[in-house]
Length: 258
Ligand SMILES: Cc1ncc(COP(=O)(O)O)c(C=O)c1O
Image 1 (cartoon, rainbow, N blue to C red):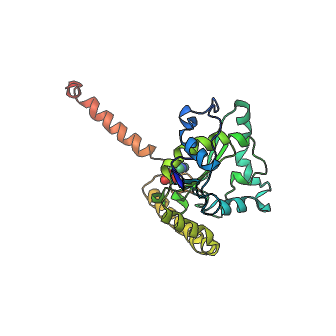
Image 2: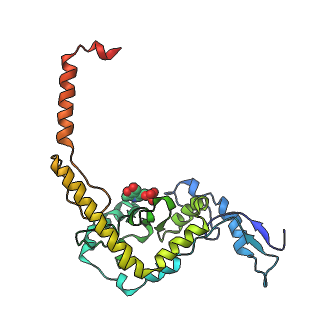
Image 3: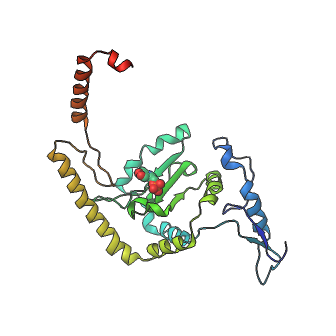
């Protein structure tokens, strides 16, 4: 249909070869969605210049935060090596085995006790950029898991393409994108309101939890971030197990067979 033909299809990148990497599942490299998107990219509708072109109504391209992420990630302060980055030293070994590394930084802003979290994106050069994936989402730092919005960053085109195949079925509603983009734009609110408050409330709550567990003799590993604590319930578990074993040993085994 000319005069704004409608195409459905996916991916924010034009279709490419569907051969794909042997390291990726074929499901991610089918290119079915890309086919429609490629038609749109080749002949995009424009009310003035190309009124007979193709309208891309099949995809919701979330570009709202690209400008923020791109600009922020290319500022000079991202390009220095901090001692904290030594936590990623093991990443050097992954090159030898050609492993893909998924770095999930979903708790990056939920740190306390003067901890400075250092993102892998601060490395001036990733050990293996083609096999490094960074992730973050609104679920933890904003406590907004219901919006189902996150960031996946990789320079690997094959992976971008595979993820696009799946992401096309999970686009977010426009109003949700609008609200989140307003959050991210408001640096003053982020830096002076929500993040300090989040950090303080997280620490206060952690104190209550750790204190309560200590009162009943449950030790907890010292933590500096995240929404959870790692508690050692072995003492209680072993006591309960010993009780159960005593009960079982005292009763005839036939009781448990029927
Ligand atoms: C380390 C980590 N990554 C990712 C997720 C997934 O978060 P969501 O699917 O809610 O965005 C969780 C949730 O518990 C998590 O703990």
